[in-house]
Amino acid sequence: MQITYNDIEKLILIGRTDTTADKDLYLYFKTRDYINRQHGDTWKSHVASISDENLIFLFNGLVKLEQELQWIGGSVAGAIWVYNVISQRRLDNDYSIADFGLRNCNNPWVPFGGSYYGRRTITDYFAYQNEKGRISVIKADRYEKVLRRVTGRKFQRAAAIAELRKLTSNERGQAKAKLLENFATKTPRERLEAIASDTKYPPEYYPSEWIDITREQIENLPTELIKKLSDKLSTKTRGKWKRFAIALRELDDGI
Image 1 (cartoon, rainbow, N blue to C red):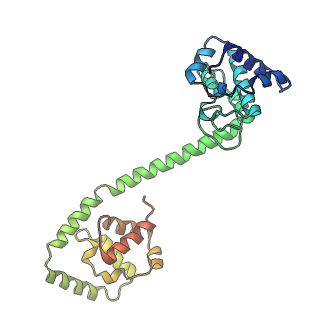
Image 2: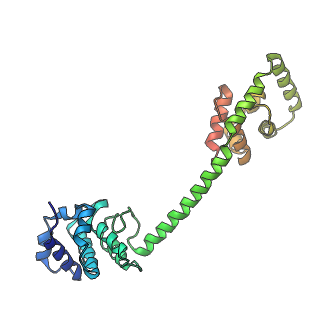
């Protein structure tokens, strides 16, 4: 079913009044909720030739009817399409018309066409949008930092593993014995810092005993150390190193 010009005239009349006193008008629209689900092109066609004043009254009428009759409209409600035309004609520079829609209709999509579930005033709406924008900037900045950080880390790990594979089993055994001797009196943190600062070999070059530490000890490590170790274990690992890598990733904030 389609909206008629007679419907438009009655909607404008409702928009002109300050109350819902004219019960006959509301009764007329009680079974015409399809009006609130017309295509946007339909509304554009019907409002193309009406005056600016009547366009605003039409918007007000749709807002009042949707609220009073509990019309279903959601993101395609008539008031949204009409307000779009109001915006195009630049009739709401102070957003007072939008404020009327926010204050007098519970549909979260009215008047701008985007869902908003906060307090229904234009002041609160813009406060929400500003905060949303601020958070988006923070997220974008964080994403850029993540990109910069992860660039090349898989290549670096692959290169380090390649260096490790050049060592014979005997050479690896000798290296492990020497590391255990040299770091015998060092703290777990100092041993992990040695792993993190190595630019040639991967963590697996070092004694796996060094990562026999508790979750609490891992949590107490400096954030930057956690990130460096996580980066160095950024690809497939096994055994203790896999468990250690998982624990690091869970604590890595990604930045």
